[in-house]
Length: 132
Image (cartoon, rainbow, N blue to C red; front, side, top):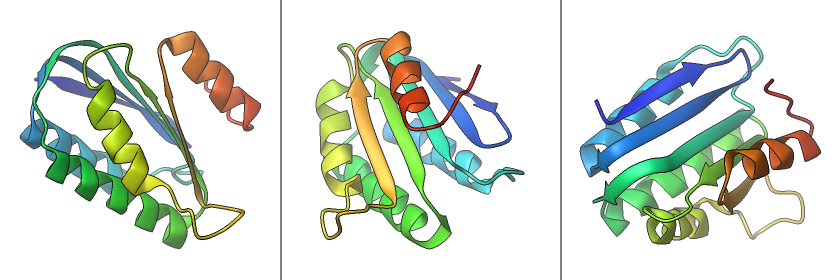
C-alpha cells in the first residue's frame, strides 16, 4: 500500500511512499473523512517525503482541494499541511489553489506546503495544534 493513516483524536497523519496514484489519493481521502474524530477533524498532516513518483492528475488534485475546502466550511476550521520537498510539490500547489477560500478574511481552511516534518509541526503548533 502506498499510504498509511495515523489517526489522532483531532486529526490525522497521512503518510505516502513510493508511487502515488489517483486511486491511492481517493481511497485515502475516503478513509480519512470516514473516520470518527472525537474532537473533530482539526488537522491533516500529509507527508510526501518518501514518495519517488507522484502520478496523480490535476483533475484529482482539484477534486481533493474542493472537497477539503467544502468540508471545512460545513464542519469547522481545519489546518492542512503538506510535506512535499520534491515529488508531489507541483500537484500540492494545484490542490492548494482549489482548497483555499479567498472569499473571506477568516477562511475555514488554512493550508501550507513545507519541506520538512519539523516545519509542518511548527506551523501546526503556531496555529494551536500540538500533535506530540
